[in-house]
Image (cartoon, rainbow, N blue to C red):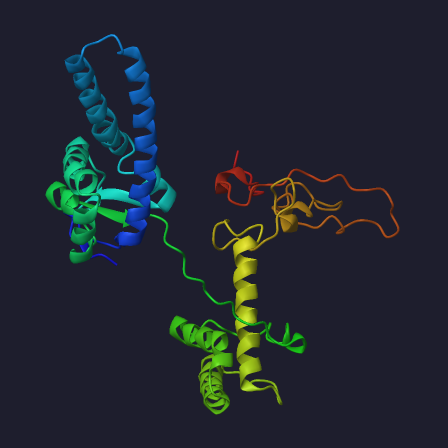
Length: 327
């Protein structure tokens, strides 16, 4: 990784492009530019056949400067450092501080590219890239730019092997709240590299990790379960819990709400309550505080119509108190 530092003292993790990828990108750009230059030159030769030699030479020089020099500068400026070849190879031109290039950067790089790429057939650019620590050519040095890689292959994280089928669900009641993340990381690393370790060393390491896990959870493993299988089962249980928390329907609800809710938005424990017969209206008992089954005659089949549910968080003055003020 490159040690680029921005103005805010932030170290950028940019990986400079090396000579093979840069050479391939330049080759693609040169093929496209030279093909366009030849087509334009043929068209101009036919269009200026009636002109004299001096006018034809001026048109040729103008087409050379516009196509082979001006076009790459314009493309690099408008695309913020990504020409066709760099886009195909996953490269990009940035400033030394990691910011996008401007017209002046592209102009300096294009002007120096005529000397070190076109006139010397890329020899000077190759030597400068090999000598430079970051693989920069002379145009990059004078312009204050750097060619970096945009597409970096992501590191493959090995998956944790699953536990034996007969251990799935055996640790559902295990308390894992006291297990630190460092221990989880050690267990994961062991499980992903268990096949690469020596059998004796792997068994000792598994036993040590299992002892630490038992110390944190306070529950010994089942009798006859090997240490590596115990570790795999506990890790699988933790992953299952994390998945249930992440994909639970009420995962985004506020903390502390544990009562289930019905489809009408009223808690089911409150929605199932209604005032039953035999409860006087002025007795001081709030409506909805008595289940519907209270006061119903035995064997009665007529349903009791539910009363409106009082909001449990309403103001105290809005609740019936049963107190009559003196006349």
